[in-house]
Length: 52
Image (cartoon, rainbow, N blue to C red; front, side):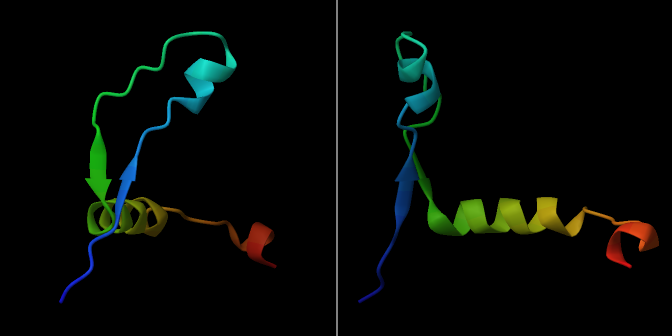
């Protein structure tokens, strides 16, 4: 049986600043986040100076 992992907004930043949490999306599947992060990380480029 497949297992699905979901993440959700906790509103931590808003709560820590004394505001009501504003979360536009209630739950996001792990696969969706993984795909988006992979695309974003794939766009990173480092100069040779940084890598050297």
